[in-house]
Image (cartoon, rainbow, N blue to C red; front, side, top):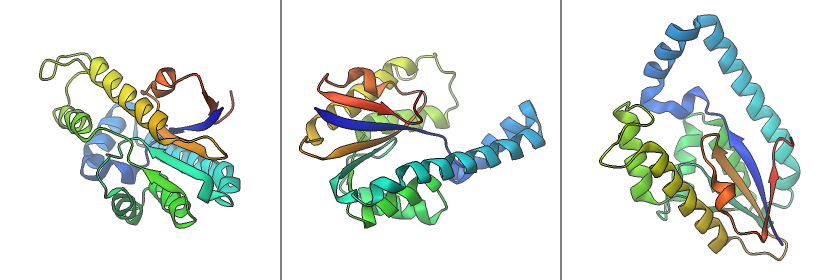
Length: 188
């Protein structure tokens, strides 16, 4: 039986890059500045909890395969993680720590499907409106199926554990084969 630990991703402000100010304005206009500040504090606290939970795995990082939401299969995965960690992304700082201790960072997403998602986000299309003939939920399903296939193809058994950092809108785990045991973090 293969094992995959699924950690939900909550994005820090640094993860939004050039879209941060638009995200901040939209959040503040809807919930207020105090709620925005509380949200940022909660996200920092969340990533500290993730770091504490993952810390025991760092000791055996050489037996980890790490899969990351938004990480294209491109041959430059570690370079991308270094760049995003340098910009302050808590998620990518943790990935970099794992990689530096021997974990194998896997390209996780189909670059073309990821590009379509990013174009859609830039256009700020409503979630269910067709974009280029493809509905948002159809695009997400295609991404999730690809990610599940990628995990299936690259996660050996034999003492290697997968660590999946994936956003809440994804349903990757429902497309995994039955021989992969999924452990949710935090435990429900």
